[in-house]
Image 1 (tube, one colour):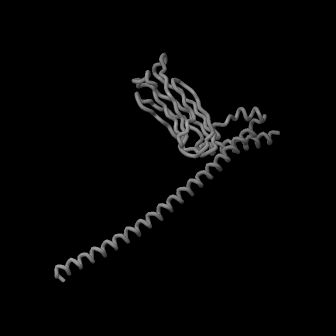
Image 2 (tube, rainbow, N blue to C red):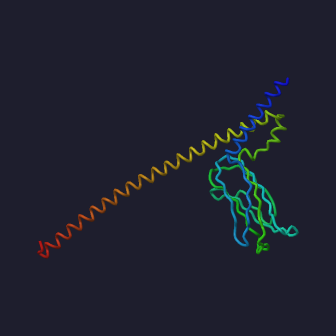
Image 3 (tube, rainbow, N blue to C red):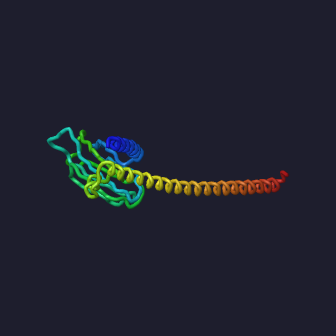
Amino acid sequence: MKSTNVQWATIFRALSVVLLWVWTTVPVGEAVWLSLPESGTKCVSEEIQNNVVVLGDYVVISEDHAHVPTISVKVTSPYGSNLHHEENVTHGQFAFTTQEAGNYLACFWLESHAAGRKDVSVNIDWKTGIAAKDWESVARKEKIEGVELELRKLEGAVEAIHENLIYLKSREAEMRAVSETTNARVAWFSIMSLAICIVVSALQVLYLKRFFQKKKLI
C-alpha cells in the first residue's frame, strides 16, 4: 500500500512539472495595468486565433476610494465588430468566442465628468484558451479530482499547444506566400525598369545621332 502511494505521488509530481511547463510555454492569460490619460483612449490588444474562448475582468483603481471615477469600455474584433461595450462603469467583464484570427482590441477611456483625474488606473485580467476554462465546474460535473483532473488539464494544454502550432504553421504559410508574391512582383518590376532604361537609352542615341547629322557634325 505504501509503495502504491509513493508511485502515485511520483506520478503526480511528474504531471505537475509537465503541466507547469505547458502553462509557462503557452500564453493563456495575463493581468494588465493601464493608466488612463486625462483625455483620450488607452487600449490593450492580443493576437488570438479563431474558435478560442476569451474572458476578461476589469476594475477601476483610484487613489480616491470615496469617489471612484467611471469609465467606458469597448472590445472589438480584428474586423471592427463590437464584442463588448459599456459606459459609466467602474468594473465589469466580457466573454466571447473568437470567430476570426487576428488582433482583438480592448479600449478604455474616462467619462467626460471624470476628465482631469490623473490617478486613475484599470486592472485587466485577460484570459484565453485553457486559462479561461472553469475547471472547478468540470470537476464537479464529471466527478473527477486529483490526478485525473490534472490529466484533464494536461490534455487541454496539449490540445492548446497543438492548435497553436497549427495556427503558427498556417500563418507561416501565408507569410511565405506573400513573400513569394512580393519577390515575383519585384523581379518583374526590375525587368521592366531595365527594359525601359534600355529603350530610353536607345532613343537618346538615335536622337543624338540624327541631331549631329542634321548639324553636319558627323
